[in-house]
Length: 262
Image 1 (tube, rainbow, N blue to C red):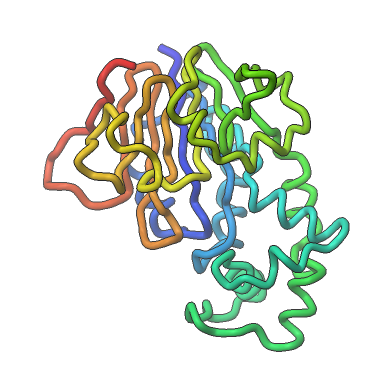
Image 2 (tube, rainbow, N blue to C red):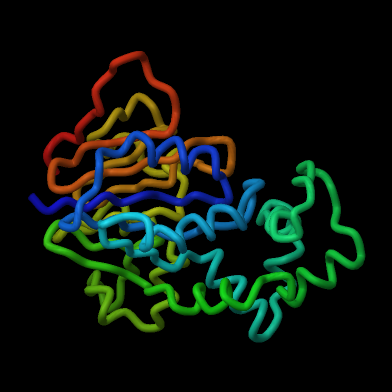
């Protein structure tokens, strides 16, 4: 049986990534791993996370699809034309990424960058060339027989949610955050990250609506950003069974949970 395992935003959190990967079943040549983007920033191990994801195609028989997130897109903009408005806010986690690549201790939340660090962040000059090349290669979406996978969602145009192949500019798939999409999209299942699940309409979720920090399953969309790298945990969903895996600890011998039918 073909299976797809889709994994939410990681944000530089190597601990939760490795915890989650150990909970997935053995993968074979008919399986696909889809990562929804945002591998870096905020967490302490952006360099390690990116190297791990980049190395996976050599280590697993499964197909590996790593999508572009808005944070990868933002750093490419920094590299190509500069974007101080992204680099400056500490909440974006850029200093954490720089120190990860320079193999220095992670900063505290209220730490400010040193002048030299700030200069390097403004140019993105600390990224190794092979990492920049990899970020440029990341696709904006992926689709298989089970679902459509995008980082942020599908924007509406002319009162219609169009297939990602028809969305222009493609960067809209990485940055959109629209309640209309969460509430009113209908059609083939869309799996997305980007918006933390606690911010999504809990009353519409068909998966543990009593826990707003958990994965979110709306009428035709699944939200997988459960706060990894931001104090939360990492979530994956297996298709076609809609089985849910989490990096956080659960009671001993508890089986993976399954989303109710969408």
